[in-house]
Image (cartoon, rainbow, N blue to C red; front, side, top):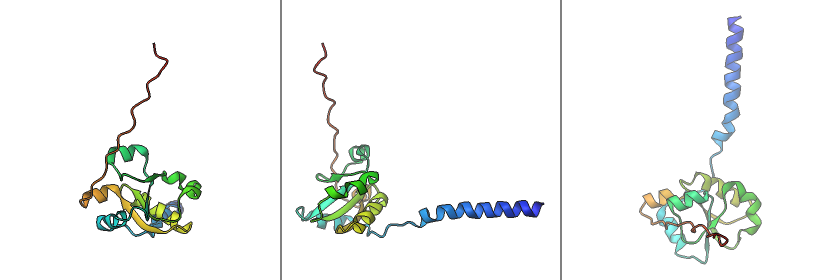
Length: 144
């Protein structure tokens, strides 16, 4: 009986471990860009587009680049028709993980993607991020 229970426990452990294997194995195929590579791409602003897949609170608290297209990773696939195809794309997140996933999605959809980048990594390598302030709340005109 003990042997049967141990066999079942082992099989269950193996089965549950395998269920997570595809997620662990899903590593992005995108090149992770360095600060120098990003700066080189940004030196041609008419040819590059930064697609920032971070949440708005991450952009305001960490900083970003002065011109970018903000599309959260969960909304990227349904937003593909609105992304220009005539520019090289940098997929941006904090440390290039979500950016890598975004780069893979964009590449598969036929976009020209330079790679993924992390805003915090860019700053750690000596790059300067722009700190963006959220707009002030609108004043209620009907207050007495």
